[in-house]
Length: 486
Image 1: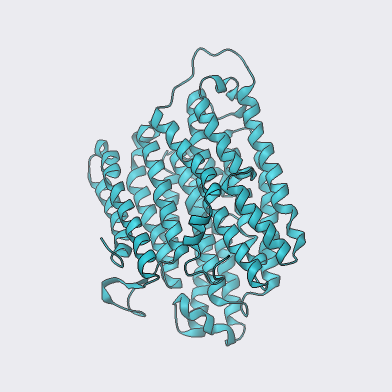
Image 2 (image 1 turned 120 degrees about the horizontal axis):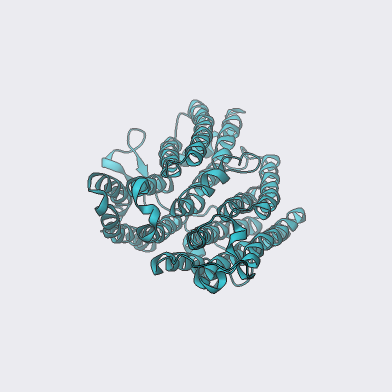
């Protein structure tokens, strides 16, 4: 399998997984999914090999070029997201195999999650703004279906709120697509830079698209739909949503801002996004610390951590090349580190909830003696969220701090520091309850080794990537508009 044929296979394999797991008997769905995972890895590594050997090459599905056909293209950022998606999905699949939620209504996890991976890959590889819209719509429908899997009243209410949010965001984004097409007559990302001289229309379009995408990203104050959706879902679903789904909208927003260029992306608008990101860091961290249910604490943590990623816009807009390159590196490393840490934290939290039979943090008393590996995984993921060395979160925040200093925007310096302190507060809140002895229990449930090792693999990867950040950053710089950092 050699690229550019790897590009369509990255869509074919997950779609085949969705269809196969839907058609086979329920007892076979997990086995079919695990059997297809090596093909997904093969396609991802084939793309890695082609990018290393041949650089960026577009691919037209069916041989039809634009504007009639669908073009796919992969640069370093898309490759990183595909590898990240493959790793997180694989770990969640292994976790779901051994989890009690994988039976009953949760059995539909397999076809819907494969469909979710197909939607994610279509977003990472899309070369035009309309196919990005299609990918976002498919992703939203799959995510809503995953949230509603358990069929409980709480899950259905959260899914409906999620559906409303994603539909409103999609409408705003689609309106922007229509305005950009009217202004330039093209939907290709590569052609958007030519719209700078088209008057106010591109800015109006970008404003609509930005509002829609930050709603889908759950950026403060448009975040109310996220905690119930992530906190009330199956643990494997929560991990997928927090690690990957909320990143897709941010990914599209970054692509749009970079494609349209400085004439359409004023510094004032970038500062607004940075201010909203700051609000997310502070409010999300505070709300996470106040939670009494473990998975809701992790869900509000997602609100906070997403805010760090929006510092990219003020740090990379209208600044010197060196500062912009540092912002690019720091944001993308933060994105990957957070995805790994948050997926690992949700899986570890699921193990702890399963062990004590209660979602409440207060009921974790004494769990450290019975489930030390799950608690260790939770703590490792917390290291990344706090930004402690040598984790990926530390390296990413260090790069963002350097970017703020290099660009002279010193007012962003307290954000990573305060965010790290708030992260420490809610992580240590959980650890404190886990290490304090409470009422004697007759027994704790015992999650299988597969459940505990899945969480550990993701959490450990979020720390390891900080110690070997140069390699993934070199991949992600391929095709970067900011060049290569020395």
